[in-house]
Image (cartoon, rainbow, N blue to C red):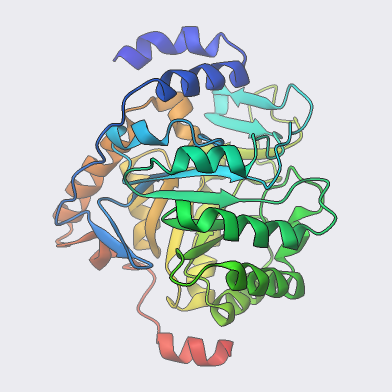
Length: 354
């Protein structure tokens, strides 16, 4: 209710300024406890015990300033970043747009962040489950080396690491999703991870052809990636009502929902259930989250929906998921994962991927 009253005033501000003020306010809060695990919602993924499957996607807390407070809003986990080895300003402003009529956002931020060193100092005090999203500097001579540096530096300070090669706002970055480049990147990144280091996730774009999906799935399995995050923002443009619909950048929010769900199903089929999947893109309700889980996701992430639904959204989704699971007779969320995708023979899929 309070957010509904405040939303017109928040949305009267420039989108990036409003976001900066939100982060500044959250940064001043004391550390808040993460939600308590419940039997139905708790899930173990990549060796990590998540109290619930509802996470905050990267991009909200870019510089790891507010993660300590976000568990108190119902998130089972928080992903900070994207963090690059060196600080960078990102692209020219304006670069963040609300598409209110479409309940969407377009951004072309360009990995704006204060660099890994500053963020890692703050992450030393982390609580709850915190992942770190890693990227390359725009002007890096060797972008793959940037990822290796990021893995080595960040591994001691995060519960999992996400290799982000899916942002559309750093020119040429998505080329690292090509099979040969991705194979080299993952080999070097995983080699840079310290012994007993955290699991490594890979975040992919929704703008992929089926052949690309099969190739990415094969490389990810062969290289030992621990999970795939499906998917980042899209450069495609479904019909949009907002005047900002033609702005360059990645589109997120409600219009991304059908594409992100389709890509999740594609990656479930391509991996045969051999890799945990994390669903992102267009998730704004418990029904959305449940559809992703039944389609093969073990975890879900949201961000853009918070712009329109407010900070209580994660808690509402978690409660709604609990009710939906109970309604359909699932004792745990893990039991519902892939319920609508069948139970493929994982061994056969792994063997064919080798």
